[in-house]
Amino acid sequence: MATIHRDDVESAIVLALAAGLRSVGSDGMRTAVAAGLGRLARRFSRAKRESIDEAIQSALGDSTTEQEQREISLGSMAGVWTELFALAAGESARANCEPCKVVGMNRLRSSLAKGNGAILWESNGFGRRWIWKRVLKENGLPVFQVHGPLNLGGLNLRGPTPSTLAQRWLRPLVYRWEHYFVGGIIQLGSDGSLAPLKEMRRRLEGNQIVCISADGVLGDQRLEVEMLGRRVRLAKGLVTLARNSGAPVHSVFCLPTEDGGCETVIEGRFYVHESGKQDKATGQALEEFAHRLDSHVRSRPGLYRNWHQLAQFQEAQQAPDS
Image (cartoon, rainbow, N blue to C red; front, side, top):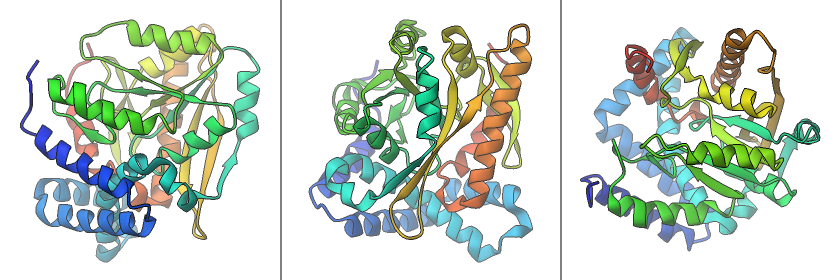
């Protein structure tokens, strides 16, 4: 394990900025800084800008003008900073996120009534990730968040493994911020350890809620689905966990509303437990999630932060399953 990676310095500067804005307590300031950084990223990050523009054109085509596509791109780039600053701000940003209406809370409670816990599938790149988790926590339904081995508050550490600096200093700082929103964090490693899986199973057996990003690019066994004009590959392990634990699965999306605040939608269950139809159920569940995410992104494309990663999905498509 390296003591420090070249990009750790950049990450440290970014987190220092987020920590500084945490103490400001002004949502207007955080929004302005995020917008400015988004404009700088679009101007100077040529490769990322080109990936975003190509993906937007591929997905939306002639349904949007060139100016609209540019605004979508700027929103995507600024959104990365918006989410990081909201994560760092925690309690100080609370007033700017109210009210947060939750649609489908009864669905989640009904699933938990079965006693096998519940799994929530979210997108790691669309809408608001943190607000709804705080709302559930305050309603006695804390979420246990699963993170990939290279996660850093919406930023990605460089692989194949995080440096000593990232593991001992940068990530603990981010996770201290995150604990305001969640009941706990389950960290996946890069060594193939089964400990995180056992922790997920333990939480579900305790009738608790586990949240996983369903649209990540990691996962040894994946299934191709159609999403945003691409053939992308989603991890089959998402469904395997649900099937083996008996936990119901819901997708959840949180979007800002035009008149302020946010609306969270806990959507209907995925059916992954049909006996004798495991492969079919897996495919249908992943295709349904991709369809739901596709629909949400097309309705609010500027809130999607992962346009550039669609190219990574295409690259992953060329790699064989392990």
